[in-house]
Length: 203
Image 1 (cartoon, rainbow, N blue to C red):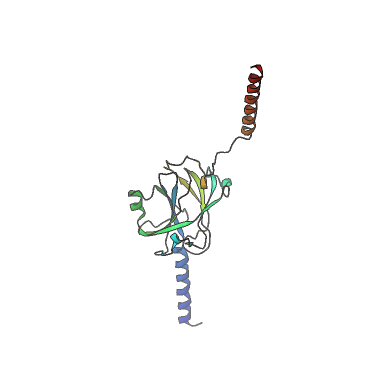
Image 2 (image 1 turned 135 degrees about the horizontal axis):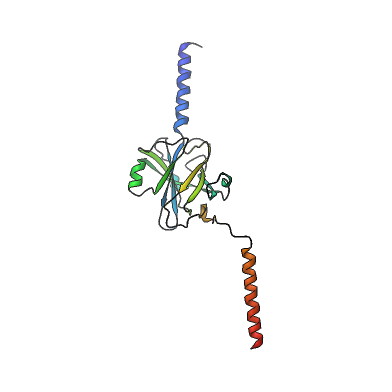
């Protein structure tokens, strides 16, 4: 292989590497819509997005954002109550700090491996969903390119006032019902019915 071909191969390799480095999620953010729903955000380095997300066409090969967990953030909770929400639109060339200052973002968490950006980056946002304060596992998937991730990220949502804390993705309650509670309620209902019968028979 001559020098020209070696240089060309190296340049192509560097471009491919640069493309793969810049094509990933770097930050997740959230907004309390004030009506019992939340919008989630995904910041990425990939250039302006013009996909018609608001026309039912998926913005990514990963099919949206999957959220799981029980609100505790424990590693063992990853994959429980899994819920996938679709990307609903895009916001291009927008500074993260400006979004916080103007109330577009209530908060955000960087990907600890791929974190960065913040200045005039591009964003995907989800359809409104029900989710409350707590620590949840977020994962988009490994397919190229817009929201590519190599691993799940633990995101701690805070400041959401219109949804009860610990409410899981899609509105699933993350607080387990004690196993004996249904039995106790059935017993109390039976006791009340028995008491009514006794009163009726005495009258």
